Length: 205
Ligand code: TMP
Image (cartoon, rainbow, N blue to C red; front, side):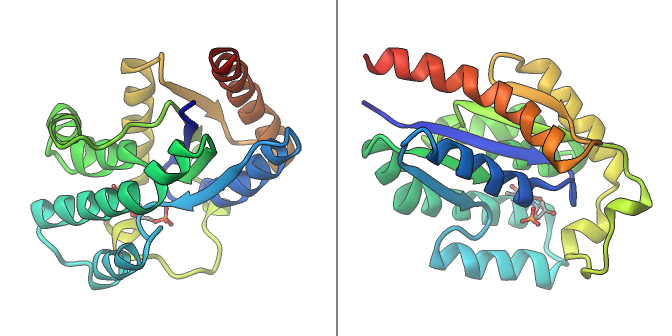
C-alpha cells in the first residue's frame, strides 16, 4: 500500500519547522514509519539548489521557478517515491504549493501554469497540505537574517496567496489559524492530519 504524503505550508517564519517536528513525533506514537523532509534542500543536489536560490538571490523569476522544480524532481526521485513505496508517512516542510504561492501567485507566473508544469512532468502533489496562517507582525521576525526570497516577498501578499489556494482546493488544502501557542496550533494541525490518516488506514485495510 502506498504511503501518505503530508506537507506543511505557509508564509515565511510562521513556525512550520517547529510544527513539523511535533507532528512527526505524534505520528510516530501511532507506530507509523515517518520520514521528515523539506523543500528546497531535501537531497544533496537540493542543498546546492537551496544555496543558489536563497543566497545568490538575484535570479530571473523563470530561472528560479525551474530551480525549485529541479529540487522537487530530485526530492521526489530520492526521498518521496522510495518512502511512499515503503508505505511511510512523509511530512514535508513545503511542497509544490510553495511554488504555486511564491512564484505562481505572488511572482505572477500563474497558479495554473505552475500546477500544469507539475502535472505534465509527473511531479507529485501532497495528499494533504496544511497551511499555517498568521498576520505578519513584528514578533514573527526573530534575529535570524532573511534569505533572498524572504527579503523581497511581500508577506501580506503571500498570506493572501495561501488563502486563495486553500479556497480553490479545499479537498486537499486546509488552512489553520497559527496565531496561537505552539501547543494549540499543533492540536489544530493534528485534527486535520488525523482525519487523513484514518481514511488512509481504512484504505490500507
Ligand atoms: P524555508 O525553508 O525557510 O521555508 O525557506 C525556503 C524559501 O524558499 C522560502 O522563502 C520560500 C521559498 N520557496 C519558493 O519561493 N518556492 C518554492 O517552491 C519553495 C519550495 C520555496
